[in-house]
Image 1 (cartoon, rainbow, N blue to C red):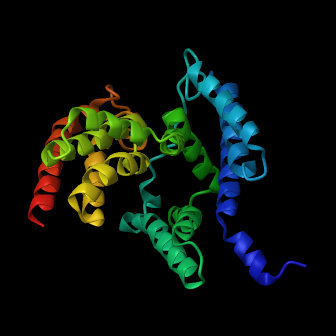
Image 2 (cartoon, one colour; image 1 turned 135 degrees about the horizontal axis):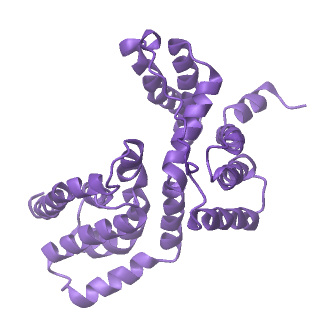
Length: 324
């Protein structure tokens, strides 16, 4: 007979968040399948159905089956069969109804604030009970989203069906880029495990003299930015560059403070986030949601600022190592 503690631990776990996410995706799949105004309704519904299976059952499915399902999703998206595609002569219903009397004013920010508050609260609770703080924050993020949904419906006097309709519309507007961060994070793990960083370090050693600190710092920041351009996320690129370049070529030979060098290297990589479509949640999704004519307009605006910030990161890291 499972104890109350075990039941509570299972309920407030990351697996529960994944299952709830899978259930929401299945609802989106059902709504897609019923949307006869969308020429991609069947394939889009199948895409979200498969993604829901991965979330809800991924912890019990064999890894090879998860890989097959991911490849199936890639095939559907590669064929251009995912997302909104209105039939000729029809327009897609957005479900956005302007009803001023249902607008709660500044109170609408309360659901948004619930998400970080619950994420912090769960992280703190996990720490107090000896759990993993990072895992607690992720669990809190999931339950915070559910709490925000409930609060939003209560404030706007809306219905759950409206929330799911709008969620499905946003999902279809973004399409497959919604899962790009997860795929790129997995790519970062693969790069780290295959010791790509060691290959980069060997190449740098063959070109730059080991005593030239400025060029080594520039190469470190450039490698971090380039890997972020590829993977769309500086956190995914960070372990590759840190283990392969920063530690063996800068921290150990010059006796640099690891915390200082690591944080500047990490934020240097963030300049790459500003310049890549791989950072879909930052650069592509806003353009899609705002129906911008140029999907790369956000990136084009950010490039000059990103390049300026990159130069400053190189100078700051070099000066801090020299002066501190």
